[in-house]
Length: 118
Image (tube, rainbow, N blue to C red):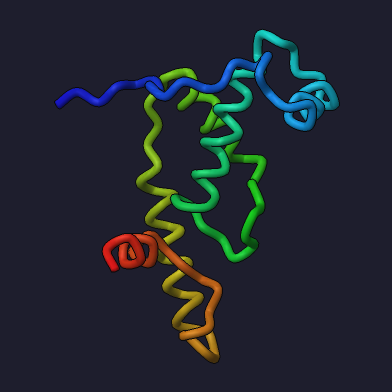
């Protein structure tokens, strides 16, 4: 089975975006022709930070993920295996070293899988 390289889901037309959403692009100086790809790269960057390379600071997007997200937006394949494995090992180490492992903020992909299957 061949996996499509570019997202198939349509992004809302930039002319239909709210003033608040457009305000961010205007404030950052993003030209009209780049707004749709910038929006998609931001969404992918957020996904990478929350699900693939989770860190304790919930809701933060690491600036280093924008380059990878931009490449994915352009349809270029990138390998996230090494950083994801490093993230898993880091999380497991954090859970192991925590004084209360049940209340640790460290999580990794298996936690999300467990929640989805529950």
